[in-house]
Amino acid sequence: MNNLQLTYTPYSAKLKKPFQTSGTTITVRRGFILILKSENKSIGIGEAAPLPEFGSETYEETEKALANLNLKLSLDLNNIELSIEENLNEFNNLPSLKCGLELAILKLISNEKKIPISKLLKRKQADKIFVNGVIGLEHVDKAAGSAKELLDKGFKTLKLKTGRDNFEDDFNVISEIRKIAGSEIKIRIDSNGKWNVDEAADYLNRLEQFDIEYAEQPVKDLNDFSVLKEKTKVPLAADESIRKPEDAESAIFNKSVSYLILKPMMTGGIIPVLNIADLAKKNGIESIVTSSFEGAIGRIGAVYSAALINNDFAHGLATGDFFDEENVPDPFPVSDGKIEFKE
Image (cartoon, rainbow, N blue to C red; front, side):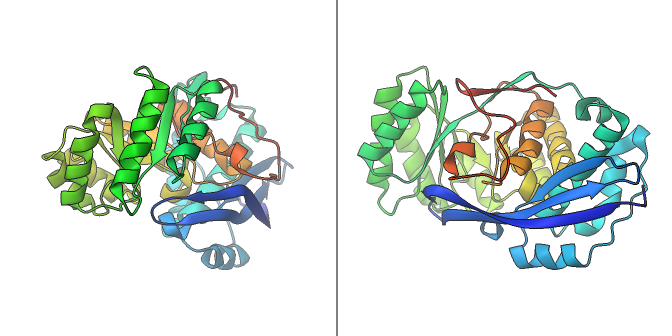
């Protein structure tokens, strides 16, 4: 597959309203649509959507790499996962670009050989994927309204952004939403590394009464998770601190978390996510796939990842409705709190 033609187009997609976390506010997403064409005229499409605030390269670094890219592939279809990883090793420090190239390659091979990606990767896929609804750092009244809307849409898991300047505001939001949701709805929180270990231990112990499914990235440093785990009964999940396979291996072998939050755009694609999830599962740790507010094409990779991990946890894939207008229709829309997956 050496005679490949790669073209790319930049895009900019505005969110309907700013999405605020404890670390940043997202108002627009920029990236590149990648189109890979073979000499047989087969096409594969991918997306590179850098988000340096959460661990990827910058937009400018991606653009520079694309401008100088001369992609040549030597692929072994009998061992496609390892083969693609070896071909894309040079992009390990450019995870969003690696993710986009990987999806374009997988789609190209799938289209050319008329083989579903699941069979190409020799993995069993789920036919439905549960997803969580997300509520940003909103005032208690607004957060309550958002929760009611999500529950009315059929979501069974709510993810609440926490890490406000005053923890009492976090507490009040979670308390109110638990009242609204009742005991059957799962609530998970995400502080984006806002707290130190002592704060996190104190806050999580106070929140334990609300039956929190897990606390995502309560502290910044991966080493702090081991300390925090001994101070709270609330299960812990690592997100921003997992950006390389070595990070994931450390968290897994130290058993410092109960969940890994995996973003294909931040970890370099579907295959790295699946390899991490395989290792985690063998060690009693579950994996949750989330988008990083990429566009519809990029979310395809995230949806594939969740389908191929094939567990019953809610994944963070319901971000299409956050955008004013997207470059392509959402191929995997969310309905009644889940995605019906058909390849």
